[in-house]
Length: 563
Image (tube, rainbow, N blue to C red):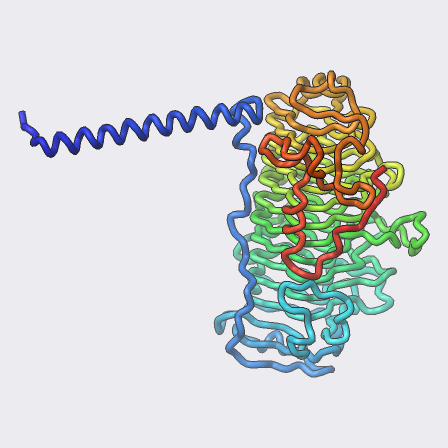
């Protein structure tokens, strides 16, 4: 047997001691983690509820081109300039000039870098990067105008590395119907054929008050960013319409700091079956946008413009995953062609040929949802053609106000779950609504519902054929946790322990409810009372930071009647 020296023995003992210390440390740490999880959630199975964020974020930093400048004067041949341009070139359109036609962006094989298509106006005439353009800049924007139902601009198969800056897209007067003003891909049936690497930067896209414009942008491309832009007057009678919509593009996408007006859905992924088998739009950054419906579209409003556009919702996912929805304002939605919910996470396998359609890993944080008939409607499964169950949706730190069924023609529900998603987190939301807090009719596994502030109203948390509160929770939310929520009204005996109840809204202790300041005052007993030591309800510092990281956003202090 081989002998060991004293030095080797000392090293061995020291090493063994370190190993035992580390084993004991990790064992205790795991035990503490399990205890902490059990204290917060009621079980240890729910710590995996957190959705996965986008795996890719597109970098839209402007890089100055090194190629030629191809100038297109008023009356010049714009399509010829697009055909001539090589990667690295600039196609410069005359500021304020009109170019009428149905133009295409072809694929390029020579050169390197990006083809920049832009106004001839100097940069000082445009809002700086990171600032949203508005219609007030129209005088310095070249106008690309569709004379018919076809797109003003289409990206062809494998078109790539185009950046559009400071352009306007619209429809000629008198045209009754246009389907897509900008078509970024269409019916390609393979990923290799898709347009890709496209940036729309400070562009103004719009219909007019009377046209049927189905879509501002059809988003069927890969690696595409739409930033600092303004899309308006997208509406149609008798059909869905969107500012931005798509179902045949894989992502990643960056949709940041835009004004979006769409009558059907201001923004939507899904709506039809993709042409590319098993495609799911993925890795989507949706931040700092204003999704807005003008009241001129609402029948019965004193400003109604006379056209019964098909109104549905402000944001909808029917097939998407790994999407971050942060720092946006969603404003004005009412019952018309749909029941008035503002935000929909409703998976759809439309014709039974998309069995992989899913909605999962959705992070909805730091947003304002205001002035709507109801707030959130969610499916766990397609109730027409069952498929993959939706999972991991987080709705956190939002201000949800003016959810008023009588005013906007709906039920005033905060969260409706028709066979809702599994592994959901709903936390730290401040909600002003007139209907139920949470309604469901099919079990929803492993829900975390904590630290929210809301009115109980008549039914509070209510499931089909069950009583409000614990009777519904035990039947429809197996493995779930409802902790540290503040109910304004309601019977505490009907709900799990470790929730708060006050008789009236004035018992909450807001800084200035009448003035629209819904922070908790230092004297409120719900200050720092959450499971995480934070205030019950929304963290307004975090909300304002998320809303205010770029300029050009709408004001976030509009006050509504929260009764």
